[in-house]
Amino acid sequence: MNKKINKKELAKLLLLFVGALLIEIIVTGIIVIFMSLNGAGIGIISMVTNPIGYMVIIAILIWYSKRHGENLWKECRFKKIKMSTVFLSVLLGIVFRPMVLFVSNLSKLFVPDVSAQLLDSLLGESVLLYFIIIAILAPVCEEIIMRGFFHNKFVKVLPFAGAAILSGFCFGVFHMNLNQFCFAWIAGILLAYVYRASGSIYAPIVVHLVNNGISSIKMFFGNMKYKEQGISLAEASEIQRGDMAYMTRILLIYGVLSIAALFLTRIIIRKIAQNEGTENQGNNT
Image 1 (cartoon, rainbow, N blue to C red):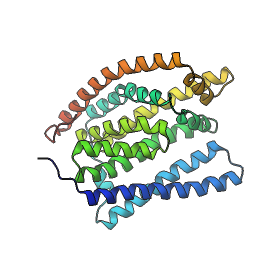
Image 2: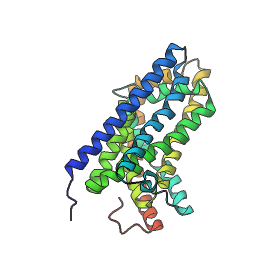
Image 3: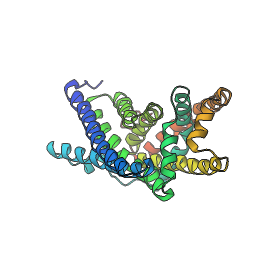
Image 4: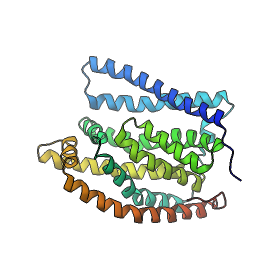
């Protein structure tokens, strides 16, 4: 039987998402202005505002949950998963990257690579903090916010597929730029399926950690390579973006790999569901 859509509750959740995002923007905006006036560079500002932004939104969600007699941490389902599921989640974090990279490069045909610009500024300040923020803090906080709270709420008022698409869309909006929006939406949908298949927030966190970790390492070594050539990571990205022959070649390669990645992703998610005994909770892919 198809789940009836609770439009009133859905509207409340979307309003909460928009409200939390606006409050986060206002708080971090004030910090950005204050730090800029005191001569702080964009790298330092990003290192301060990123963690604060996550904490602001999580605090709002904790408040909202308490108001409704719920516990955010309990709702997130920090449930222990098998080591084999951890391994499968690590594998999935590698396997589904071609899909993310295909969508990311496709978006670069229309908009600049904002992530390269941000990571370039972070790398210029501290490599250690760069890895902590991008490869650890972001995956953990974003999964708590997007899968642990919003997806969990959406799935109560929408059919699962609709909830996955909507939570993925919100995940894209959460990044607040078109380039990251595109690949985050796709990643968010896949992570929702991983969440359901595992029955625990740990599996999507692991997938997210692996994906961001690989991206961070790639950006780090790319930054070193381009510095030797006398250009920044962001400048190199813009040069590549303007080379249509290069972009066409990259899109063809990642397009073909994405077909194989989608097939393997379905297999791995089903295996996770079998591993954790959730395969009877609806189709997991």
